Amino acid sequence: DTDLKGKDLLGMCDLSKSEIAEIIKFARLIKRIRTYGGDFTPLKGKTLGMIFQKPSTRTRVSFEVAMWQLGGYALFLNKNDLQLGRGETLEDTARVLSRYLDGIVIRAYSHEDVKILAKYADVPVINGLSDFEHPCQVLADFLTILEKKNALAGLKLAFIGDGANNMANSLIFGCAKMGINLAIGAPKGYQPEPEVLEKAFFHAKSNNSLIVVTEDPKEAAMDADVIYTDVWTSMGQEAEESERKKTFSGYQVNEELLRAAKPDVIVMHCLPAHRGEEITEEVIEGPNSVVFDQAENRLHIQKAILTLLL
Ligand code: CP
Ligand code: NVA
Image (cartoon, rainbow, N blue to C red; front, side, top):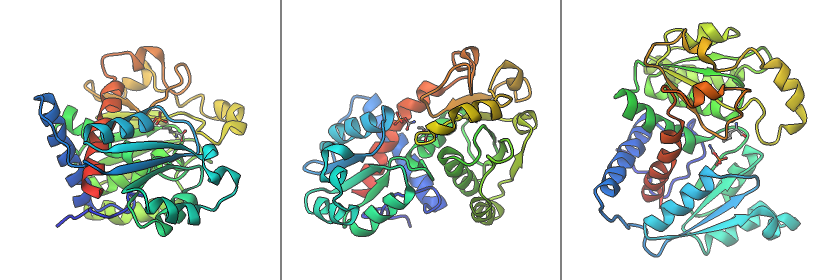
């Protein structure tokens, strides 16, 4: 009942529960094929364009390598090297690129740009991070959680930090759809937008997911199966950095916070990390941390996304 072919992937907010499950299931299969030395090249002759308005290590490299391993070809398109950097519109860029490419990844400052590109492109558009969502990351994270905990529904995930950023939003929508209980520990002024919560509550209800927001990070982390954190200052927010450092100083994922969670809690971070800020060196390098498995799974999930959409 899930046919993702030709569709855009703009956010967890637009994916159905069965589409999320399908992408994860397919990624597990593809990962296994590679582990056993098999070849899987369904995208022979296909090309993917990747427009980046801001920096990236994981998203860029995993999509590029995924495309190559699937038999296709990827073009990295830095915004400033395109005519886009000289004022050509996204609308025109979308229609031109659609004549050459089979899919487009975009990393944008504004989610509006992702939507415009999707509206004007005739080929699938994938959100490689915007200020509003980071769906490819959360799909990979759910694959990681499933591998480590053998379940998604019924687990408790605590997100500590900026409850209004792209990671928080994608986790809120994703957890609501997959029946994961979510506690957000975030200071006032950095808690999820009411519209995001409202939209998520609708899905959470039918999937038995409890979503709570608290100012108390310990309360959020209490009995958690997963503790998740992200940078306090996202790309594009650099001017607010010193103010954010002050506001978030009590929201560090450290040994003390981990003691509130279950003993076998896994600690996740989408990376890049700022050790000594949102997470301590001991925790990110400690036995509960799964951050590099998480990063690896970006590759496997991109392959599933690309194969299903293209
Ligand atoms: N997690 C993530 O998307 O990393 P990059 O910014 O390096 O792509
Ligand atoms: N919230 C971070 C995520 C980076 C992958 C940012 O937008 O910079």
